Image (cartoon, rainbow, N blue to C red; front, side, top):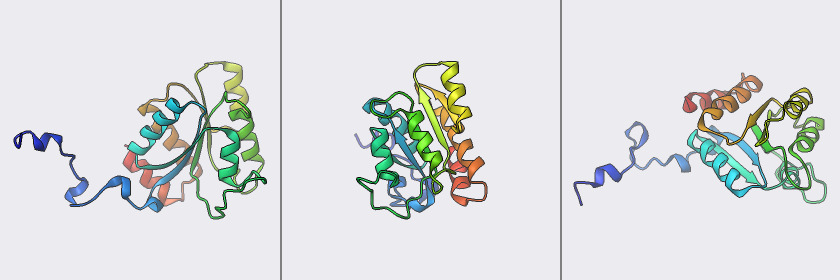
Length: 174
């Protein structure tokens, strides 16, 4: 059994004992808000982004996303200095679509610069064009794959070129 133990152990980055990437300083990570009504899709997105050293907040509806962002007057999240580097949202959700969520975000003077990526399991050209014309930074057809993380990274870098955090995320994702 002792002979197999090195195979089961994870290699620590840069040989630093006690380093756990999941416990690293979140201020050095890009923060992504993932919005999807499907638990499976939320978990896939969360896992892919966390593999690329992102902090991920996942919610299951457009309304909860608005609450988290402080745009819902009824139930504010209470976080005034919230830093979100990217929002990725499903297009088709009950109550509020990802398109409607994106429109509300782009109407907010405080949040309009945050890149919004919309994803859908349906490859409908008219829907894709409408989202991109109205302010979405990208459109991804599900299922989201690790290769799509590069596109998400590119969205953050385009919006945050002077932000060191986006550059660090890009370096880790590559």
